Length: 350
Image (cartoon, rainbow, N blue to C red):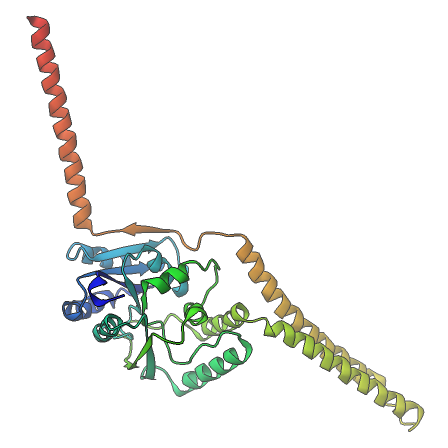
């Protein structure tokens, strides 16, 4: 797509209990967007079931800026679904995805659009540092990606957050995926080409306000869910572990047989029996857990529930104008009706 064909850019921002960040983020966007080389821009906030005044803050912005749109979730559906919802409502020739905590600096939007105008269909960011995370978190994140890419058939690069630009042809691809549980960056890497991809490196600052919504437990659950979504290797691993356990048990049985009949040194049976029962029981429970996780995913997917339930709210100024026009039209119709009745009465009197 050539430069002069780019008419509209959609900026999709997910927000969950971010009342302290909305105004500051909008102020940063207002500084950056006049320098962005695209004629029209829409800013789509996705309120992911916030329990604070996040939605009210966004609606207040709509009274000042008609470019601001709001997708207001009825409850919390999660960050991945929030980005999907924003993409569904976006009308742009490309979408930029970002978080509302200012750890995705808006200043890089101009560089993203410049690369897009020069022909890049996908512009990703690579985080070279995150001042807000501890060394332990960084180590665990690196370990997670190594395990994920070892087990997954779709390789997901480390330190590539959801701050990215996607051309419309790739957002159209992503809209075709129907799974309820999804990892956006995993789906993107599933369809990502070898060419037409550009990278921007940045250092993530600290959150402007509030605390992260991803606790260690949530991060761990997301990690395990991601592995299940993109690979069946854990199921194969359960087969390998079963074979290994059976082999180990066979050799142990042979050892006890030789010990009893040829060495005349029988091992007391209770300790051995309890150890083996405990070991085999643990293996079985692990395997059942892995199989159960896959069955659970199947159970949730076959229901085909809607991904989200939300209201789509455009600028309130526009709504007021539309309402005023509607009332004016009603008034005109009412006046016209009165005039017709008066004319009819005059005719009847004559």
